[in-house]
Amino acid sequence: MKTQVAIIGAGPAGLMLGHLLRAEGVDCVVLERQTPDYVLGRIRAGVLEQITVSLMERLGLDARLKAEGLVEAGFNLADGERLIRIDCEALTGKTVVVYGQTEITRDLMNAAPARGLEVIYGVADVALHDIESDAPYVTYTKGGAAQRIDVRFIAGCDGFHGPSRKAIPASVAREFERVYPFGWLGILVDVPPCHSELIYANHEHGFALASMRSKTRSRYYIDVPLTEKVEDWPDERIWDELAIRLGPEPAANITRGRSIEKSIAPLRSYVFEPMRHGNMLLCGDAAHIVPPTGAKGLNLAASDVHYAAEALTAFFRRGEADGIAGYSAKALARVWKSERFSWSLTKLMHRFPEDGPFERAMQVAELEYIASSRAAQTSIAENYVGLPV
Ligand code: FAD
Ligand code: DHB
Image (cartoon, rainbow, N blue to C red; front, top):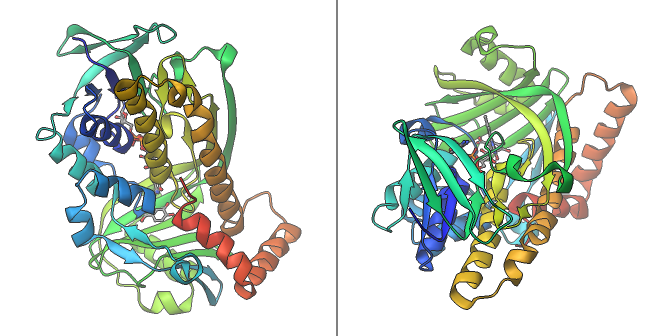
């Protein structure tokens, strides 16, 4: 097979890029290791910045997002008894939308056939070849049969564990990493949320997040040591912890219920440079990971894809190669700012096992400063709603 761009991975980054390219008349094929049901079964991010919403809008795939997404004007930082409200809309004029990554993926997946976007699911042994040349190709197997796609560019949208990043020679690569000493235990429950806005809590028992997917579906997280297993946490134990960590006011409004999904995600900060090598561009988790505090992972994937689609479209429509050459620097400038925000909010809202009284005093002082300073709240708000693209 021959096409213009091979996209590896049909997560939100790969599907969004595929749709953006097809909308501009660029030919592409998306290769995905898993089945559609498996991809839709992964419960992940829930908060969309304007960039993600506007990409769906531009694609004309925002009908359900508009109808079902919950527009959030602000969110809260809980600190013991107190809720510090960050009024994003008043401080920045912008809002975020609560709409699950699963639903974004479903909308992109369902629209693919009608938009002429070919997605091949259930592929194995994906390998990238000759990415430094102008005629790279991808090999894979499907149902045991060997296949090959010849292309002009490859887009690596295959998440943290995919093969694309590994195709870049170690001699040109730089990696930056911080692994955190806890994971987030998340539950999805069909009960009304305890609050109309998200609450990120720092309590002596540890971190908690009250989030939601709709007015009848809640998403809650607590941080747990990496040694803990999901089996150690029956629902009632999680509810008891949430009630303590979120503080008295939200706790009084918690509706308990049976979890329909429960999983532990490790926390990591990671950046791989460069995000382009030869004719292969990396987008999303393939190039970087943020800890989930701040809800940046999916939104960063969207901004990468926006830059990548612009660069590839300029190349195929107008023969301009500058966008391709500048892609890595442009994407990384935004990536590093989101990395900084996610890292700083993680440090502010979690109790690290190695921290002593001084570090805790710094958290208290910072939360006190945030509570009393419009400038500090504005800084948090403008990062939370998403920095300019
Ligand atoms: P992915 O969604 O990982 O998609 C990559 C795709 O590539 C997958 O479908 C994968 O199957 C496919 N693939 C991998 N290897 C191959 C291969 N060899 N061949 C073909 N296809 C391949 N962010 C938040 O903001 N909030 C959260 O609560 C949150 N929770 C998370 C929980 C978990 C467990 C994880 C892993 C991430 C979470 N994130 C969260 C981050 C957010 O979900 C990601 O940033 C987002 O999914 C990035 O999208 P992506 O398309 O780049 O990568
Ligand atoms: C959700 C996840 C996040 O990481 C976050 O910061 C906010 C919300 C969620 O899954 O709803």
